[in-house]
Length: 385
Image (tube, rainbow, N blue to C red; front, side, top):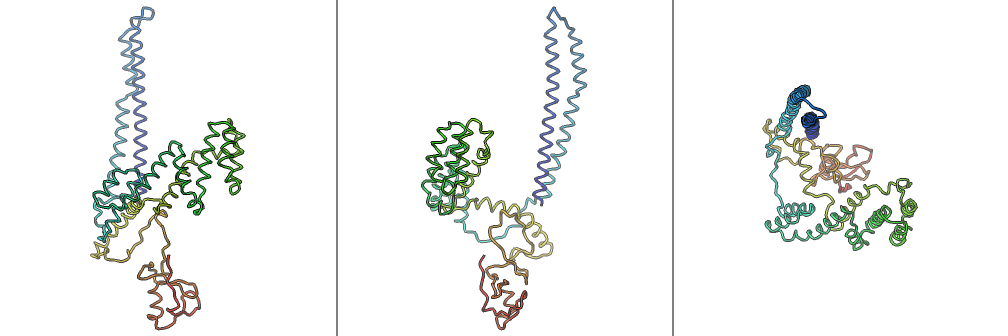
């Protein structure tokens, strides 16, 4: 993929730049060291105990600097770095067409939804002033309703960065029943994080008291986790030898933050990932294919923008696949609203247009292409993915 090629090239340039910088610093340090030694000898000239000849010191310094050859080394490093830097822009020009208008398809946008999506993105990032400005200028007052939710989430996540669990506990407590319905164990994980911090910095008595008050209510449903945590109390002061040292890993904070964000967004009816970020990322990944298609179709003097379905697949990563897609095994067409997948009595599935062709527009029965069953169009039922 071209994006991977560009990424690899950038990493190569960055690596060479880092190496060049490191070697340049070594040369400068060498020169500085020799000069400092020479200065120390010059300062000793006035010392009657060990008189030194100034001319011999400077001659010796010159010989050492000529041996180091700093200009020659630095010029070589600079030349090598410039060669790598000059190749990278050429690769960018080759990989990316600055004119992306060819891949643009003129469709009707719901600008109210677009404004709300962009404002929501700003709120997710904690850029509340920008979100408010967009809403005010675009005249989208109804979008302000989501602001308070993201403000609470942002403040909670910022507190977690300094290991302050109080805002998270308050939110979990207020939404305890909803979280239970989702099968979430956030509350247990929160107390686990707090318990581990007590074990790290507190005493055995503090840890035992916390476990009795906050962890004991979870023991009946989560006995295995409870027992591991309680055992850790014995190892206070020598946690490196604890058999359950994995409970102390800092990754638990990251996992808790991610799960809290997922549950927070879910309870307020928002997706975990920003729709704006997903759309931009998917567009960037699919853009090279669309630009190639536009160039090929233009050469053939064909218009691709009016097509209901692209003549080539646009391969996107699994992170952009949110639902199943059905491709008819007979016609090889992808299912759509006009041509939906239809379930036959034999449990095989074809697209509607294929069934209509096989049944001669519903005028007769037909044999399933994959089994001996005889089917009529009236017996087929639409499937929803």
